[in-house]
Image (cartoon, rainbow, N blue to C red; front, side):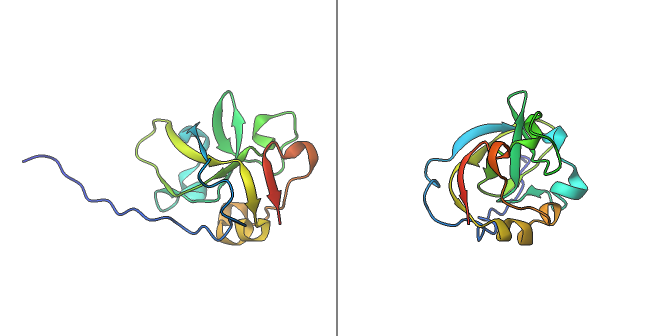
Length: 132
């Protein structure tokens, strides 16, 4: 008997999107799973859609609101477009939403780990995202 497993896939809460512009053009980037904490970033086994990320050593990491702009984690490069199931510890590809419109207050309200999220200003916004 083969080893089978059942998975449910959903689109997650994408109310943080301010428009449909940019959705079709999300690019694939590699997510550094070791930089995310299970209890904080994916308590239900999924990194949620809308999670803001920075880029360190070519890999996506959680955006650190408090970090200075001298570290990649402190420069927002975009948001994870769809929920991403975390299986094991291997890094994996995710869709990165890096241009379009984002409703900053929705990011803060739907993501407990980013409840203090505000639109980054100037050098802290390394994306082509317009925050509304």
